Length: 111
Length: 116
Image (cartoon, rainbow over the protein chains, first blue to last red):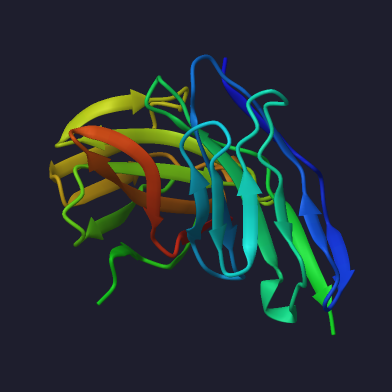
């Protein structure tokens, strides 16, 4: 069945460092791909999305490119801030009308 | 004006009790969901309703019963609570485009259930 695999955390970086959180997927057809972010004590919120191959989603300085050849959707940010500390979830929307989440990656940014 | 609201936010109860969590969305979405998040942050879908009709029913004990009185509300009732039911339960709704689900979810703040 469809699945999402993302790098295990926690990931700890210093402020202004470059961030990459890896995400790969397995799916039949052409799923839509998403990154969600969960700040402490809150629900998840959509960070960015891409609906077809080679699309780049971007928001708040974060970017991810839908790579069909490598079945990946890695999240990147050039310079992280303390306020980016959160749990990040990669997700896909499959043809079975299910939205499947990865296991989440906790990110901590040191001042 | 909260888009997806859940009540209660915290729930502490004894094993064997029955409890309910309520969810309401004011976004006009047709599809609503219940997700369970465990202590390791793993998020698992439980149920999904589209216009009051159950469309996703994952492998969940039948002690869990969802109910959707209208498309803006989706409640979750849990009978005979067990220790393993302790988790954060999230309600969500999703946009549709041309009648198809888009995969963009809007989450409530969660209801933390603790079973003692």
